[in-house]
Image (cartoon, rainbow, N blue to C red):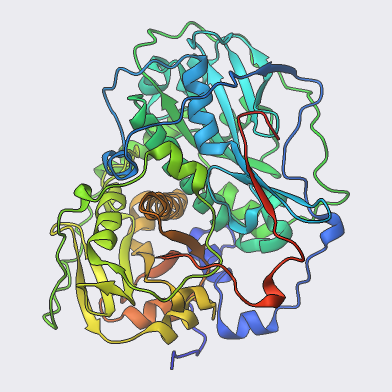
Length: 540
């Protein structure tokens, strides 16, 4: 059985990343003592709407990306691509990363909309803004993207790329890009259900969305890079958002060759109201404190943070070599035929039940090899942020057991053989998904080393990277006709299970993969079958 004894380490500052992480762990005791009840009458509205802002409809004819999914995922970025960022290209990038892709209509009229990327609890707290400067077919300005009607709403007129570039540590990328996407998180839309743990979810969900955005950019030959070194107050002020309720998470310059950005017009305080999400919003001080403690005050601080982090030495521990059996063969992963990326995203859901059938070992290694690659973050040595551990329950050609992913050999390395379905379910908050999946990926981090190198802002990077890798596994699985889902977990029990290899690390995120199953129990079926309708952009 899994050891359920509580564990943790003392900390004194509530805003410190280590203190926040310890305060928001799941344990056997914390889950059973939780008395939180969801107030469905006060559930937040799933769209942010600016009723007084100028609406700019995006092109409705959006071409689906045709590059095979595994190829798009494996490439990760196009640093010197020649793809044009015009209004149709921007529409494609937004639709296949944050758009509404289908709706399910249940008997009685209840309708659920699905978006291109998964979100914890289907709450979709991640918002996307666009700072456009040289996008053909779109006037320069600062825009908010509303997936509900597939429209940009202009918050500011004029080219503000220079001001945005000044707020970042890689202003050269921003100034040279025709447009920059900015991802934010609305606190209440996630804290309504997940409360103080929501700060983690902000970055998991943003990472999942970014997996789609990067893959779509690759398929369109559009350069894209993720920037975490930026001044939060300046970016938030440019967007006109209140950081106590909504905060910026990541910037993604899109395209290149736009030329020097002109001086930005004055960024006066915005007074554009948005539609309230709920009758009442509850405040979670831990979330606010974690955001504030990891914020950078200005552009100089952002540049100093990135430069200082790159100057620090960090000697990673040697890889654990456990000679207990075969390491697994990487096979020929990218030779696995996969669906076109556009079809994959349109089909993607969030698996609610897995069959326990085995999958081909070549399929699993194809997904892992494509998804677990170095990604285009502005951080030096971003590959040291997280490590991937695996429970492989049923993959032909691979022994059942606990593994770690070997990034050099591009293959799973066996830590201990055995049948661990029961343990997989228990580790994943006692959910059957962790037991029934073919494989479960656990993203762990040497958090103390990360914080020593990058400070509390490194905690943002760790969670974003884990969500991004999980999102890439999502795409790989659906690209091969399988299912996937993100899972929550018992923090310390995950680490204990993978010791000694995982000693000193912390659990960050979990993704399960395998063949999806339809529920067969009569009590799980609706009175009549639900209808699933694919959506074109703007058909909400």
